[in-house]
Image 1 (cartoon, rainbow, N blue to C red):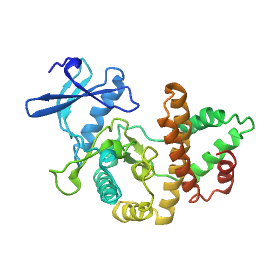
Image 2 (image 1 turned 45 degrees about the horizontal axis):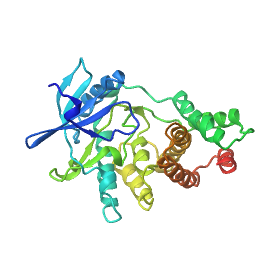
Image 3 (image 1 turned 180 degrees about the vertical axis):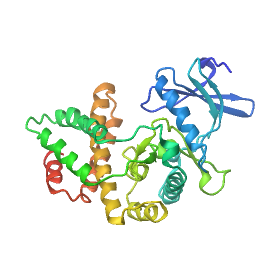
Image 4 (image 1 turned 45 degrees about the vertical axis):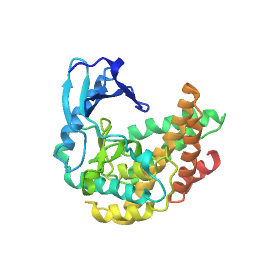
Length: 305
């Protein structure tokens, strides 16, 4: 199947290098993902697709793979993306629907299926934290930031938490990658896309991505309830207090990286939307700090945030 991009509808594709198009033929439409600018993502997408095919969730069916052009032709989930349709009346319904899918993924994937995925380590965490120091701290013109102590505190807390990094993590399990599929039933009404960055990580990683979303400033009224719901329904060995502590530590790490990422993108693109994301991320970081027990780490954030 060959397509001239001139006759296709371009679809917003976020910050990645891939390009996404919709092609309509009679009463049917297909999504075309062009990975030619990032061939590694093309391979990763197909690898993760094979993993998720074994799970009882809704992912787009692949119709054709063009290995030469690094294009994938797949099912069109339509336009009812969660970030476009949520409101105060349906927010909990959509969040719970998404959480139910994370639970199913965690219950139906196993280490054998995930063996080809990269495992998250402290090295990955430190590289992400560097964005905060390089861009956010630099933007504040802070000259005395205790960089070495900052990384050491994070190293200590990471290893003291004794994380099990052997679970499927979508990485970007958030409203912009979820679709409401009205004609499906039960949990299958949540269509999941954009999973090529998946890795082996913390069992609650995708819960963090969903509930602590910095791109959408929805209320946190349901977070504690859904954290407990996820814990009760998932194959988690740790007790609830340990899980909550692990959850909030990695949530803080994610928000920290994003504080740097938004400054970086603001400098590159000069787009004020990143200022909005920055403000939301700061508020979510402050909320997360209330659940962190490490006093020294909290003091650094309170002083320099």
